[in-house]
Image (tube, rainbow, N blue to C red; front, top):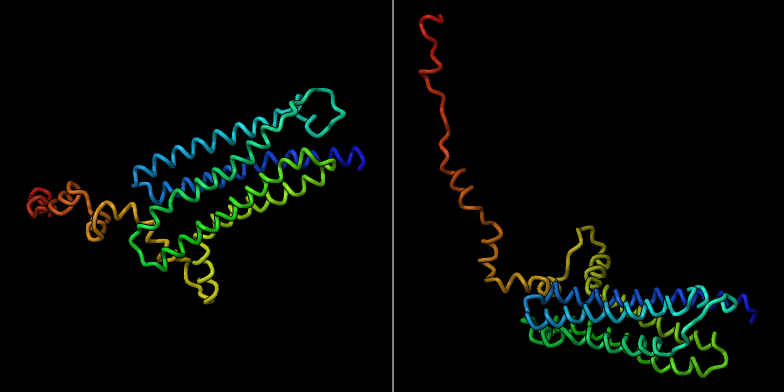
Length: 258
């Protein structure tokens, strides 16, 4: 391989590793914020989710900054002819490869105890568990990527070995993105499979989850009453305010004005 081609390939891989770190972090943060939206009434889960958000942001920020500023100047990461220095350390690739499956397991196992005890029939519960269960494929891909990391430094053909890491990294983020979309996918399929022109509707098994925080505030009857409640002061003022009628005495002209 020519030096110019090699530098171009390493440049694309380097920039891609930056984008991969940001994308993987955002996928995990999406799930954690979703848990706060769905199960935020559970105090233990809320605290654990906030802790997970801080951890995901911190670890990925460390990895991202380490990847960007590994060389001085930055372009020496892919241009070996450029003057400067680089920190040749395998700690960052291993840290990234280890952090991915750990955070994946944390993210996808966190809501399972609550989902198991939700007040819904088993069919709906299995659908919801299947959505989160597919996320384990992302964890498997990250574990395979971890296993491929040592061979990257032992191989004489660096660019060839990079292809395996890129492959499993792509599978990892693709599965994560797919899982974030699967929550609304049943409604999408149902809407277009029937050829309906009606507005989009969220499936009932998802709506029941989204309303969990509201149901914890009281019964459905009380919830409906709260939604249609009018402030007492405004209601009293509007109902008790007398309608002023024009006085016949003030409207009658006086004899002097005739």
